[in-house]
Length: 140
Image (cartoon, rainbow, N blue to C red; front, top):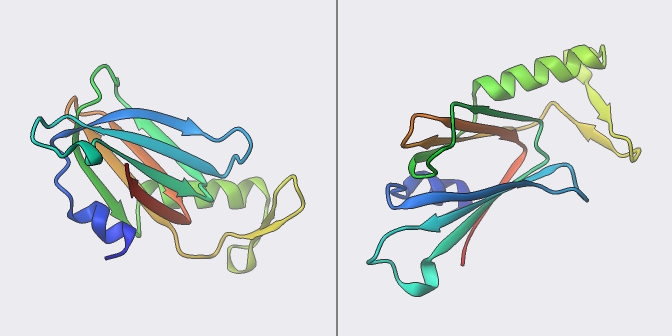
């Protein structure tokens, strides 16, 4: 089972949001730490992390007073993907059909690729959405 299928198949009701980190050395990665809140969870599975690599958009709505997770879902389409690509293309005034974005380090990044949208819905009703090119999942 790949990482995306594993994330989409898990029941997230016993999990809480431990933290969100944008890597200062690699601004293309957002890491999400998750903590299992279940008393019945084996000790070796008390945490997990989701890494969103080559991210192009981030949205957080509502208050994160409580970090209890209702659901986590990954989709291949979504509003943050669409909005982020439109904004990037507009900012760099490029044709959508052959767009490349040059990052400050000089490496060309192809924007016309496959994207994923990570959707985290908290029990409070708040939502966190991240658009990225690759998602990795790891339990620890």
